[in-house]
Each structure stands twice: as structure tokens, then as C-alpha cells.
Length: 118
Ligand SMILES: [Zn+2]
Image 1: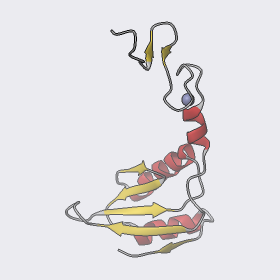
Image 2: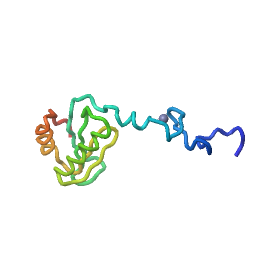
Image 3: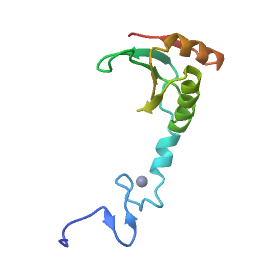
Image 4: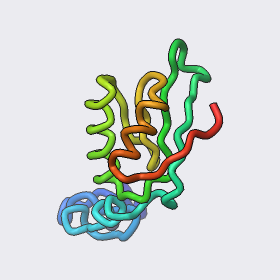
């Protein structure tokens, strides 16, 4: 390795975080990101079929939750709908067209949502 090459790998400190430059073992960036509230609280339920074939997916956008809470909520939605799903960039994706289903479920949780587009 050339002496001029700056590597994110350091044998002494382990891998360094590209965001804060701290050793990953001491870095809290992931925690901070996980705690960050993603949505604006205006909850919209979309359906997306483009490029997915078949029934498409239901997208739940705008939930004012952090990443960890979004994942927990996605898990409950998947159980409720009996289908798969994931969380991507602060948006919950649930397999299939479950818009009406999830609208009613969110209302039960005291979360006002509206159907949008799709
Ligand atoms: Zn960091």
C-alpha cells in the first residue's frame, strides 16, 4: 500500500465511519439515523404496480416514526395482511393491494391516513 493512500481501513482503529470519521465501534451515526423521524405525519397510502407484475405493492408514506418504529409497524402490518413487506427510505411497502385494509387498520391505531394516487 502506498503511503499516500488514505484508507478507511485502519489496523489500529478498525473501520472508520465515512460520516463522522470515528472508528465504527464508537460511531453513533447509525443510531442517530435510526432515531430520526422520517415522515411529516401526513400519512398517504399508495398502490404501485409499475414494474412489479401482478398485484403490485401498497406503499405507506409520511408516518412520523423513526426507522426502528417503522420496521416494527411494518411487521404488524405484514401480520395483519398475512403478506410480506419491507421498509425502504422511510416508506413501508406491503405486498399486494392492501390499501383499504391498511387504511382501516391505521384508523384502529389512531392514525389518520388517506388513499392517494395509484
Ligand atoms: Zn459515524
